[in-house]
Length: 155
Image 1: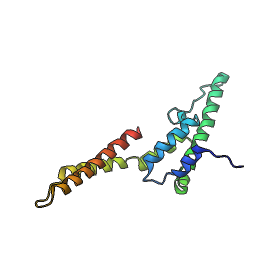
Image 2 (image 1 turned 180 degrees about the horizontal axis):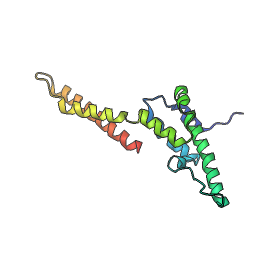
Image 3 (image 1 turned 135 degrees about the vertical axis):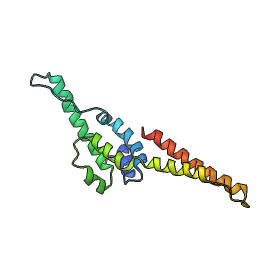
């Protein structure tokens, strides 16, 4: 009997393809937290300074390395095949996330800038109903609001 893992289902249904970066990241974070491996994205690999390092430091490094492998598996399995191939050789899960952010994470800025430009430059055309202008301005405002919300979600 096949087991059902709701976390795997979340990642299967929300694979990173590029334009969906923010949604993908929003779905990936709770999965990594539930697997107790999210910390590898925010902490550096422990280094062992010398040969006389206590066993606890060796254990901490071993745990970090295992958790990094698990995080990489979750991240890579939630990407399209093309993106998997681009990231598979990266050693740290945090490097994969940083590269993904560099590739796709700035899209919300473009949406916000375009919405601000439209907000500033849109003028009501003489002879058209006020209703049409108001609806257009509401749409521009919503685009700006979405850009701001996504920026908050990314952090």
